[in-house]
Image (cartoon, rainbow, N blue to C red; front, side, top):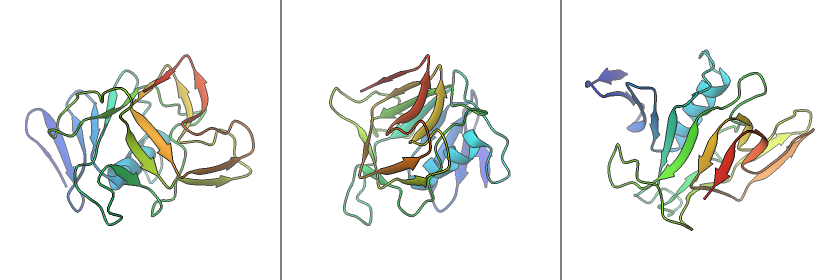
Length: 171
């Protein structure tokens, strides 16, 4: 279910999970939106791989308590996690944790404030490039924090990024 209002494409699956702008930027609002993002970057589930070259992906800080009583964290345990970006399809955009004051808010978080992503389990002992991001190239990552995660892989294993080429990871 998609609709276009002149500025945004809205994609609804049991509520607003993500929004894609006309210019290719993405706003993610919940765990399903984050899972969709993985599929699009990696070309999974019948989608064509997209590197988001020069596009921005905004991960909105959650504003309502979820079933875990945690209002600010993305709990990913119900999703099989696949690292975002591969050597063949690297993530090349900007991934930015932002405030949640509006649907299209792009206000960066203050220093020492993060969008928290919890309970990622990556158990891929025979796979290279295992992390939240598997392979990034000319990317910018900011305003996210990974908590309660487990990563196991063959080579190039990391928390936020397993492999980073000409990229920058900051608060």
